[in-house]
Figure 1: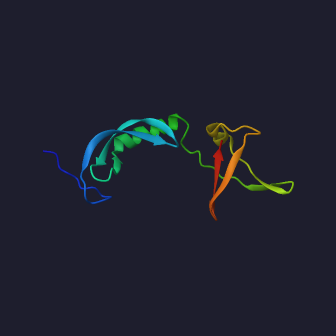
Figure 2 (figure 1 turned 120 degrees about the vertical axis):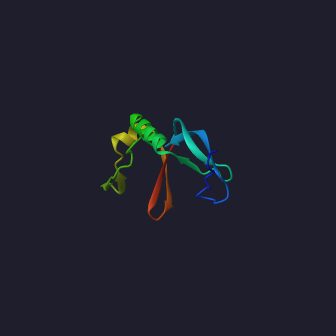
Figure 3 (figure 1 turned 90 degrees about the horizontal axis):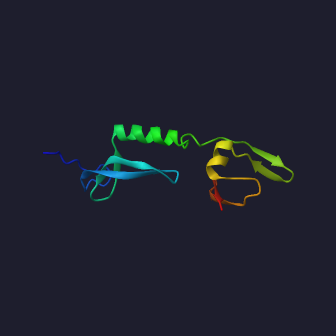
Length: 113
């Protein structure tokens, strides 16, 4: 008989094995085996599934898109350069309109329309 494992998140439900879709940066990576809490839906991927997920994310070129950039000055405005990998991922091109939205004092969100 299989041992019931109590959920580490809600401490109320138990986990059951399921195949669940994994989405990374809005891209569907695939369906993988996981433990899902029957009560709160907390999802845990086992080591083998995590390795497959990481490999697929890297294969799709989605791994490591985070980048540093310096603020520079152009005329009377400030400018932030966006690295090529992010430009390609976001399908940005010169003249495309974006929305700049502050999240808090340390975060700026760029919305591509």
